[in-house]
Length: 398
Image 1 (cartoon, rainbow, N blue to C red):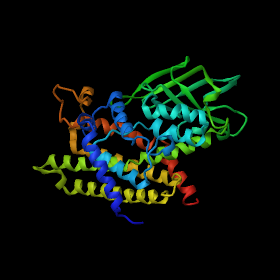
Image 2 (image 1 turned 30 degrees about the horizontal axis):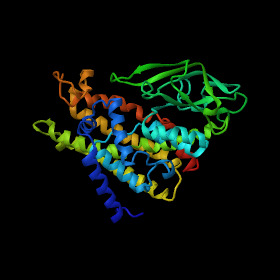
Image 3 (image 1 turned 45 degrees about the vertical axis):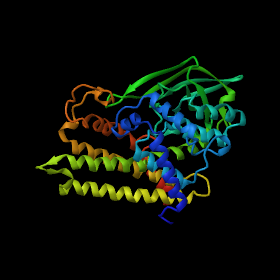
Image 4 (image 1 turned 180 degrees about the vertical axis):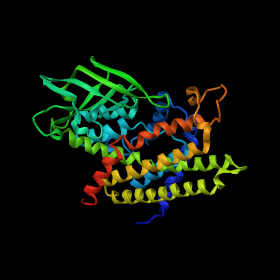
């Protein structure tokens, strides 16, 4: 594998940098780099800019409004985006349900939903996990019973990220109880305004309303909203998860966070000297940087392996495990750099327009909140323990 960019790839990187220099709103970049809260309007404003550039749907075929980028170009875009402070795209529409619709949906579904995802008219959320079906997703209980031209859906989903903003949800539902768990699941698209759907907030440890519970009580969903075949949804769910898990590695985000950590440790003092000069702390930074370099090379190897098309298989599980561990390690070091100031903070300090006095260091609130929030990284998208089982079975043959 050639680790150096070609002349064409370097030119593309220059194009990306010029675009971000000109088009990325300074207030949004400041929020991202300062780990402050982003509003729904912030995300929609940036999506509109990307869509106008034609750079929003980088995983889609051109015929549906995507952009024909090579895997290396996508990698360059991710790296530069994180370095500049670009908001992470909300993945549920453009990077999750859209690839499923493109591959398994019918033409009517493609014509209806894909343009609305591109335009931002639809905000999607994900209905996978349930109170009794997280890592063991195939044990889900939400039922969909066929009644003429509709399914009647009853059940509950949980940890539904940004469901309070969504007008659409894609759900795994049980349509057959007489077969193995994986063989009785279907993939449904639902309008969140349908009667019988209730969204209740879950407030996370750092005080954020990021996730929700979603309840379904006799919800009528048109049969035409079934993707692919009935009872074949597990196949579509696994296809979607390969996209999700690869993205969760967050190599570009880790590189940006590591740079911020080094800058922070250069300003913090220990015994009158910069913390980054402390042998114990600098050794911790060196270890995570070595791990990140190795993960970045692995990511490039996987990119090279899919250059001709397709999606990664068990390699996405490997990246998910190591990538999330690295992100958590960087969060932990940033928290340690803040020291005792990491403990107390006001929730309002997470807002960019906060004008009050900070309880401690102005970096404390966002870094503490990020540390708490990112404990989830090794759990969601399939827990790291489950991913290790996948790697041991599919790669190591154990």
